Length: 327
Image 1: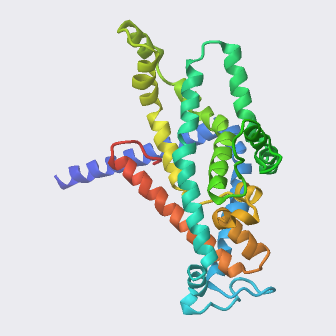
Image 2: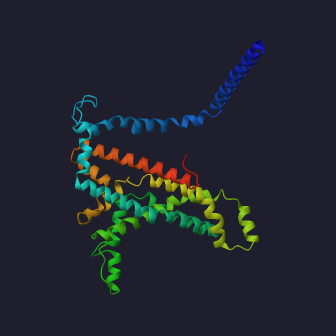
Image 3: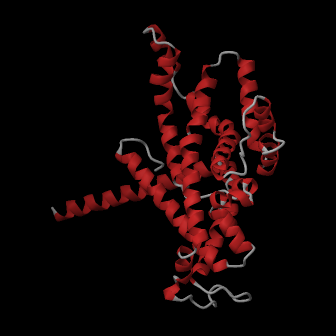
């Protein structure tokens, strides 16, 4: 009895070893077959290691007193158990205004800018003239490739308070001029409009690609049932896009306190600084120009932690509501 159980245990162990060996051989064969694809990963991996992961070592600067000529390990710890510069950041009125502006502008971007590429993709999907469809798509994609300095130049030609094209037309038809770029409230509307215009075409690509995965048989069955274009869009296309929309919404919520530098920096001026100063421009002015490296590193670390929290929360909420998350 004991001998038989011992033999059974030995045979089970041998089977496990053989299975592990087979899996190892399969993995080697797979890598050998597709080694070119793995080779293509080398450059992105090197990029992330050098420019993303390696700089994480210097996050310690947020907790230390920065001294030129010393390594991070040699720098002395800051006061208040290393949290001196976090306390300074939250005692800094400019940072609190920048945090408020970043949140409000990103929320407006989310509410206004997020649905635009979805609507555009739905409209493009309904076009039947292929040449016209391609022409519209190409024109919509073009703003993505313009730098924000060029876009600001175009905005200045259109929305300048005295000689801007829009204000000249308003004056011609007897209406008062609108300070699009000089009034804080109007500047926010212009900022959101330009952001949506610059990105909607490019962002629609992923939705258009997702539509190709929707089975044509669903549309055919809907046509047989007498469904029109709008009903097909509402009951077939939009539900088919739902997983893509949820994932992209989670990603955007994860960047709710993140801010690009080029867009607010290019569009801001002294008259709208109370609204236009965001975290990225605060870091530029105080870190690069003001050499307050400890303060701005603390701000950057806080920003990253909050972004990760929002990302995890949005993903958890999505899965809780029965939708797919990003993992």
